[in-house]
Image 1 (cartoon, helix red, strand yellow):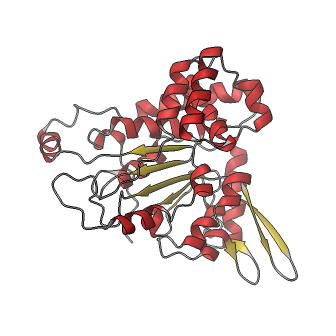
Image 2: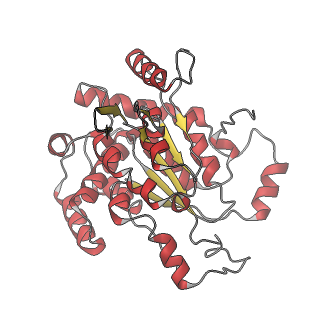
Length: 326
């Protein structure tokens, strides 16, 4: 079996906005969708997330180990790292959600307290994608059978990627796109509005110039990009601020609507900015709440007790999803 490869952020050339999105997502436990052409580094960025996440505490280790024991594939080994589940796009709804005559946890529960990575999200079956709606909202999944009803925890962080179009080259200046407008529209619609509404952040990942790749390859390995270890220090500090504020190990992504009012007040300038943006982007109440949660995480990374306009403005940058036409 090919060993799992966990890249360091400094091995990824450029993509500073995507790396910033990854840092924010890791600090606040936010769901993230990366949109970009093949070869832009989306998969490598997603795999690098594992190097940024804080270590599990004792209670989480016990909880995850027990859960994986129900699935029966860990031979009772104690699980000490955050799960990183990456099911193939041919995975059925049952394998994602769980099920069987005697219900067992699916991929979303095995990703509990960790990451569920769905590479090329539109390639998954529509039913499988839609089945994520309840777990993303509630952090649990309930499987009903004629004679039983089983509930499994599913508080995972969704990291997904997609190409701008079926062939992948809608944004590529060197290769022509072969897709029709109808194909692109149909491709983008495979991720429904309700599912997108449950994703906190969306970032565009552009293709890196070949010259930069060659320059990086020839350069001294000690120069260039920021390491995962350094970014992880900021993430750990940001999470400590969240936990200290709330008095419990609750990330900003898990704040309830009631908690938002207490922990995420907005000043007049920020409120006006959010109101104008909500009207312009036609944002739902859920989307507005997610923007505030992301802004709270950005403020925590900035070591700021208050959410100010610049925090909210950055959070808004990660809300709009770009679609392409030929």
